[in-house]
Amino acid sequence: MRHRIAGKQLCVKSAHRRAMLRNLAAGLFEHGQIETTLPKAKAVQRFVEKLITIARTKSLASRRLLVSRLTDRKLFAWVADPNVKDPNKKASAFWDLPAEKDIEFNRYGELRKSPRLVEHVLTKVAPLFANRPGGYTRIIKLDKHRLGDASDLVLLQLVGKEDGPQVSGRKSNRRATADKRTAFAAKIRKAAEKVGA
Image (tube, rainbow, N blue to C red; front, top):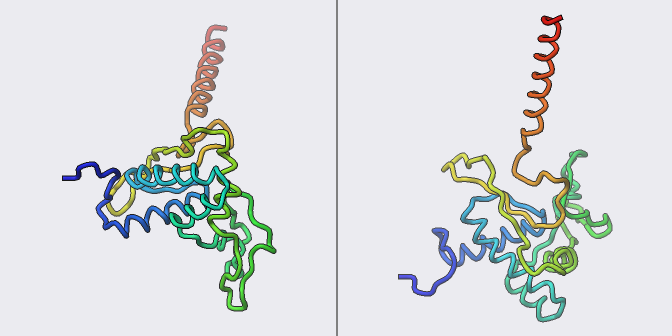
């Protein structure tokens, strides 16, 4: 029996679960949104919201708590990778890219210097939610399923920097359908006027 044990086990051992939550949270902080399954999204949502609440108070104690709960890895390594020759590669739509001087590679193409995750959470993520008492993330159900086991996929995203009124997993067809109906009705009306005249 699991008396007074909070949280989901997600069918993995505790060390694996802790590492998975840290990696999902780091991906969310880096990209602004992640695509995952619903149980994982619900588990990481609680974890992330507690981290953001800690980060809102900028102090040495909060920095140490974040370092103990997150893996302080380097960020934005995929942005200026010299080995990638894709000019159309876009960064995360959520964050501004760091300056070229903030990212350095050695002669073998390995990342030498880059912004750190904890610093990013304290400087970019926490100020977004300074006046918000909670509810820093949202879960949007997608109409997609994972190929292997057909699990329902969801989008877990940070609230606050959405662009436009349409914030969902896919584009809405309501406007296009309404326009088609209006055009069809106008076409029938013109045909009826020609026949009547």
